[in-house]
Image 1 (tube, rainbow, N blue to C red):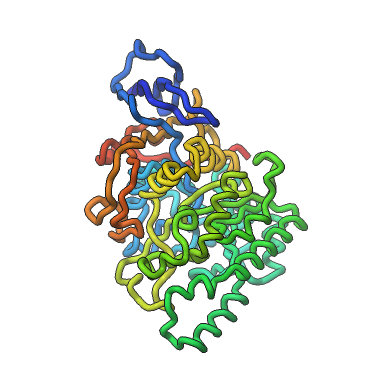
Image 2 (cartoon, rainbow, N blue to C red; image 1 turned 60 degrees about the vertical axis):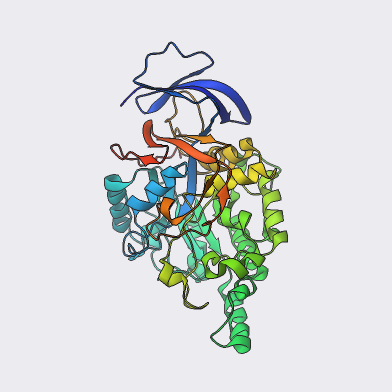
Amino acid sequence: MARVLILNGKVVNEGKIEELDILIEDQKISKIGKDLQSESADKVIDAAGLHVMPGLIDDQVHFREPGLTHKAEIYTESRAAVAGGITTFMEMPNTVPNTLTQELLQDKYDRAAQVSLANYSFFMGASNDNIDEVLKTDPKSVCGVKVFMGSSTGNMLVDNQKTLEGIFKNSPTIIATHCESEEVIRRNTELAREKYGENVPIAMHPVIRDEEACYASSSAAIELAKSTGARLHILHISTGKETHLFDNSIPLKEKKITSEACVHHLWFEDTDYAEKGTFIKWNPAVKSASDRAEIRKAVNDDRIDVLATDHAPHTIEEKQNNYFSAPSGGPLVQHQLPALLDLYHDGIFTLEKIAEKSAHAVAELFEIADRGYIREGQFADLVLVDLKSEWEVSKSNLLYKCGWSPFEGHQFKSKVMHTFVSGHHAYQNGILNDEVLGHRISFDR
């Protein structure tokens, strides 16, 4: 692999921004310093005017393979991720078939090794009846166990209390949960049907999947984790009330209960349903402007530990159905970092906070080996961004297989210029290079 020298970039890393040079050699960062111009290199990139950040690590994506590849696949979505500055992803188990056995889990790893431009890991799925398979999960080579404590695709709603207790007591690794109360959602759905019949408007989505549904489930998961000693990570927090369930008084490495926020809950709010309709239908739902404001605040004060996408594509035809038929989810990996950088321009997050929550903290939370920072000896997962390069999202520049984005028509203020994945120059100024594929990540557990 080529020796690459990055000169004059403003490096955003570990709470500081410094103009530094970086030498990449044998997949890793071999030197970081202020005057490395004399180092021999096969390729030199003058990064003057650019900011160099650690590659983003997305702890929640749905790349739809196997079984749902009309929506997305690992090949297409990993390329979109790399173009957006995401160098590592962790993929969820609600594919077809659901990833409920170790054999099916290995099939995903085998497929990613053939086609993924980004680094990767896959969650083992839990159901009401596969605890024996869950307990076989290797914590050093698998990111975690996923538990749906709310409605989901296939046989993945875990609503048997005894099963939940068994998973929480015995899981060999971190448990990541989708928390929404199925009971509350069903009740709210019945009320909506009584009022609207089958023509429920999309604006009712945050009413049906409301604060109570989220808080009841998240608080129950936390109580179960406390009583069993489980290592719990709650995904996609969508309400301000939930943010107060989490502790910011101790360092991340000491936390046993952690949380994630996703870019759509940081960006959209419920008045956007009027324009975007089902194209911003997610579970949990996008809620009020005050919920969004509290989630942003919780990111800044460390009640929220990491940022992610919950990238979950569906076809345009599927999303154009009525409320009950349109599936929840949307494509986001290509646009997470540009969206976060817009929030930087708006004064909501600092660049240092974006690097922390999208890379450093994800690596710490999941105990990922040798990634997540810009350090000598770590893998060279890097993204170079131009904070002053505006561009508009259009169908012509989308890389998602589904061919649409909730950001279409938006003019972003910043642009990803280069992405390095394990030392490979995988993306440069709009051009992808998949001559070298990503790595299966490992964990120091």
